[in-house]
Image: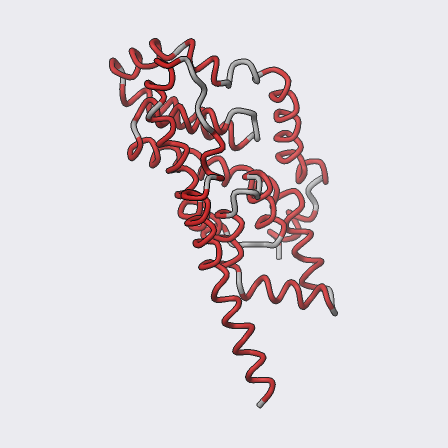
Length: 246
């Protein structure tokens, strides 16, 4: 009881401070960091980055993961470039693991900030509501795993949005972490593999094809995973209707 009262007595601005800070940094970063977190910047500094990696590999990994966490956690521009850089520096497989680790930690930061500011209050209101809102909330709660994997796998859902929706719906942290880490593997693997081939792209004086994820041979398997993620929801809906007809 004392913990609850202490939480309730906290000023409103303290509850909203983390998410407001993220929004403020994101807005500033959108105008000030675009030139630094870009493909051109990577191309111009590629030799220095490779030399630093070759001389201090562990430090490079730590600095890269920290940078990736900050980019995702504060919704800064350059997440796609960061993923390409991970592939360029560490190769497809090691780069994918490193990229996913940084992205997941950053996602947890913004998820926690959003839940602290708005998520808990919104969840309380939805839990206390009745009628259609209550039915929607119940349906989401019963299919959280499917919903979480679906929004992670669909390429059209922005990463920022996929971090906020679970926070507003009261998703437990462990489910968010697991679904984020596993759900972003396909997309991360695609972009990291593109980054791993940047050496040849640089040599030809070209730019990487970031639209590769929407090409049929990449998109269709990902859409198949999306369909697989919502299959339990469909099965449950169908079997539920059959039970009602008995």
